[in-house]
Structures are given as C-alpha cells and as structure tokens.
Image 1: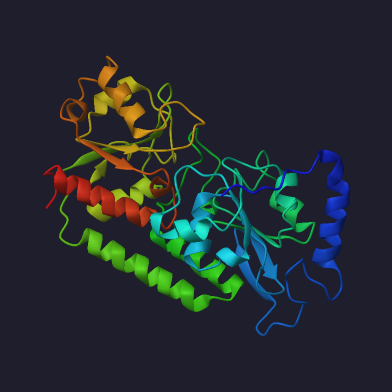
Image 2: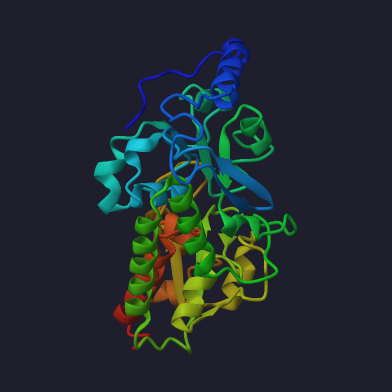
Length: 347
C-alpha cells in the first residue's frame, strides 16, 4: 500500500522539526498518539542498542521501519496498528504478513527522504542496516533523536565493521541469536514481550525441523545476491553463512569475511560450486535482480556457462530478504535444505 501523503517540501522542514521537537520533548507530553510520560506502567524503558541507550517513555504508537527485515519483525509481533510507514524493500512481504502489511503506508520502495519520514510524525524509527540509518542514508540516528524520536538498529548489522569492499565485514560469524535479540528488544520496547518469545520459539522450531537429518557435508554452494557486471557474492559470515553452517555445507567463498564481496566471474568459475543459490529480487536498483535474469546471464556468459552447476541447472532460488540477517533467514535455511534434497545432494 502506498501512502497518499506527499513528501513535504524542504522549506517546510524547519517548522516540522520544531513541531516534532516540542511534541517529543515537551514536559508531560508525548509524540502524537503516545500516552503522557509516566502514565503507562513499566515505562519508561531503556535498552542498550549498538553502543547507545534507547529509551521510550511509553509503548511507541507511530513507528516507521526503514528496512524490510525490521518491518517484518514488527508485523510478526502484531504491531501493524502502531506503524505509520515502511520503506526499502527488496521483495514482496512474507505471505502470512501481507494482510497486515497492506494496512501500513509504504513511504518508498527504496530509501525515503528524512522529510518524508518526519511527515508521518513518528515516535520510533527502526532499521536493519547502518547504511539506511546513518550518514548517506535516510538520516543519522542523532538527527532523529535530537527531535525526540527514538531509534533502533538491528544488532546483526552493528556487529559488522566498515572494512572490506562488500557491505562491511565480520570478525565473528553471524548467528541467529542476533536476530532473536532484535525480536526481543523490539517486543520489550513495544510492551509485547510474550509475543516476542512466541515468535522466537516459532523460529527456533522451524530451524530445528528444517535441519533435522540433513547431511550436506560434501556439497559446495555459492550465493549470488545481485549485479551481473560486478556480482555480489556471499562471504563466510553473514546470513548465508548461517544457512550454510546449519546445513553442514561449504560456501566456496568462506575464505573472505566481507559480507558481500564483489567477485569477478573468472574467480567464480574457478571455484565451480556444486550449487548456485540465487537471489530472486523484485527491486530494480541493480542489474540481474531477478532469478530469471541471473540464470539467463549464467547460461549465456562464456565464462560461466560451462560451470558444472550451470550445465546441470543446479539452482536454488531465494528471496533477497532470506539472504539478509532477519527472521526470513530461517526461510532461507528451509528453502536451501529443500532444494538440496530435490537435487539429490542431501539426505
């Protein structure tokens, strides 16, 4: 659903900023739709998030989520009625969340402007990636917090460094614990802790079921997210690393800790993986976003068309959301496990 409200002109920002500042920080008042400070039992609540303290004076009532991963957590916690905007999508929303998602305005398919977000008078802003809630993104966290708007960033992204050339790198492999922490943090801030524990338990159960009796120890895989000219392939330690480790397989680019290094096709062909896990994205920001476009490239390119996986059409398709650290990573484990079984490569 696309919001019918238009972005405010830049000239309107100072007045709007003053309004948000007054409503967010005024004595005895909260942002529009938020109960007065001190009137809700158990609040204010404070958590540590990515090296800073995040405090909410009452359960947020006007949340904006700036990435699909964060959006799907809030929707899964039953918080659609407390959301006033979403943004930055790679894929359709998870099927079981479609009805709830349709009630929340989509501010932009990609990154909205700072002004566009403020036009919704948010009292809480969350994001999955520092690149969105930081310099060069929608706005740095301080810009929101200076206006009295609490912010939250996924712990899965905080653990990355800015080194490397592929969306940062990791000293330690990502685990699902970071995703579970995000669920629990958001559930605590919004006052729905029981829902958070139910969601985590459900994800853990699905993960156990997907990996039961799977043996893919001798299978090599490669994960291609997007771009045909300088393709983004998964390194060892992001969400694809979770999938690979859970199934006991081997990522042919486990020797790099960069999250999504751009690797030339000659190197890809030289590694010659057994299976290609291909991102099937619906966004249109780079070349070869859809799986169909990726496969057409692989089968026509003189460097890649002779690869064993290409000649034998050993492809497994995943949404971009499943290849990012999120609750959809569990879906990635499920689908890769199923794909390997269908290809006769895992028990």
